[in-house]
Length: 116
Image (tube, rainbow, N blue to C red; front, top):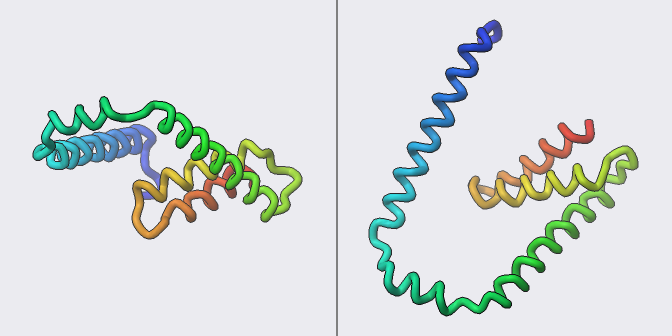
């Protein structure tokens, strides 16, 4: 509706966010319903924190390299490295939560919005 009142948009947005939170809560409760917590916590205690930190550092470095690659490929001198980094973060997050690698489209959309 093109001539919608701002209050109506806020209400609609709140309804969508609330519905999303409710659906997420239901899905999480279904997912953890059959978890055996004893073995789960035993596995958590067995984690070697050094390997977790090393993996986190490698993942963050990969995101920076991916952003740098996009900056080189697009060859836009007016765009900041931060714009490419934000677009890479959004793209990876989108690939995690949406099917069919939709995060790649999100990455392009964010990059376009941030760089014009």
